Amino acid sequence: MKTFQTLKELAACVGQTVAVSPWTEITQEQVNMFAEATGDHQWIHIDVQQGARPHETARCCGH
Image (cartoon, rainbow, N blue to C red; front, side, top):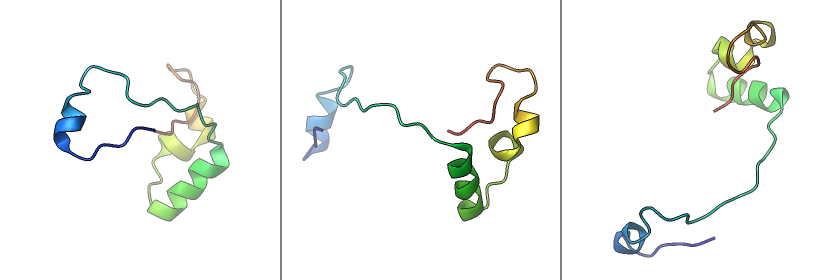
């Protein structure tokens, strides 16, 4: 992973791929635990039945 010492170094990389990491699978249990820790209980994150209704993702959303 590249690190930057100054904003000038960072600015020189605009438009370039700087770092890529592998995908990490997040489980519903992890999302629920995050909701408990932060108090963010929006249905789109934790209500599996509502999240399964027909729409673009057809599941709960973590972002």
